[in-house]
Image (cartoon, rainbow, N blue to C red):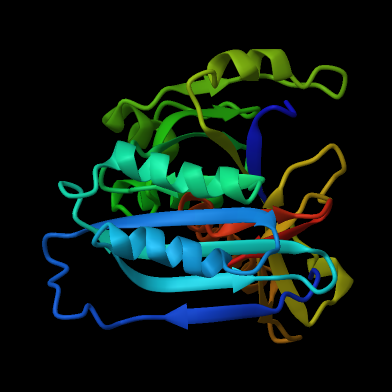
Length: 286
């Protein structure tokens, strides 16, 4: 499953970041403008920010926020730009060509453009275990618009009864549910791949706890999935304090809430192009 990007809910290198915010619309009303996002990764060079800014400004666009990360002694440049534009004056296809020209000039490794109002939502499949809190939260997040995705199906290695909350929700919204019984010898990966052919990425929603260890801080981590268990590049992490006053029930409740928030934030960050791979085990998160 290496060819499919996956997010998993279950700390990393320091990033030095330059941030630019432009909240002045220069007397141009944003009510009829469209929001665009552009991310860039290329060899570091003089004038990259100027080229990107000029591309947007010369086509009547206006930068709302620009984040740049240049790791020390790496010769690399990363950026994420939020901007608004008139899609009639600067059509989506022309915009793609304009950014592509810049990419070719400076040998960009990655140049991604997204216009949420015009582009299709990312299609995701959710892989869930027996613990359903992250799955249920993701479904409700999709329903109320907190997660800018379309859920194509839910796949689980645990069957759920027809009267369960999950099954009733999925049937009500026409989302297929697939139960795949797995074993240590057979993870059913080929079957999963067949079910997610029309999917942009997979979300693994599962649950972990450490109550018996007597910890004072609990945490949740969302990361890309690799062959190693819990070894993928980190997207988001959250922590919360617990104490001896917490019983098992309150401990689990805090853990579940933390995991739901962490996974939801990771999905939104990915969809908003806020996450870029950095070296082998790290990410740049704008």
